[in-house]
Length: 125
Image (cartoon, rainbow, N blue to C red):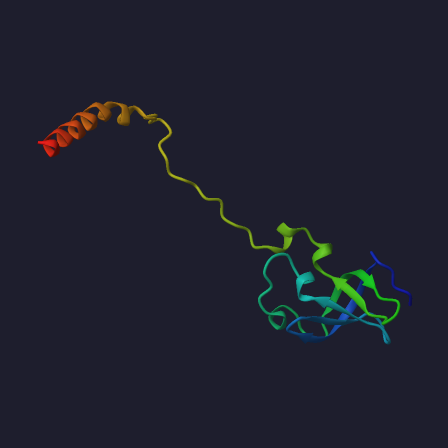
């Protein structure tokens, strides 16, 4: 069979290496899913995510006509939010009714200024 870039195909995992997963597309053609194409974000260990004999739907990324190597992708078939665990939304506990702004600083500034001037005058004596 002739494989084309952008084609979605089903294959069988034949081997797992630290750098990627080998997938048999038919009896004579095998492709590689590089670790960077196995999922969105950080991929911890491929042998925990895949098993030999597992059926996968993959997308053909590249076909090298000279070496006949086929690059495959799982990541291209899924949206990022489908593969990543859902994050809990953070809620920041703030009281929005208190609107102090710079008022406390403005209230204390004359006292700070007076104390600083007194300290400077005492050092100068």
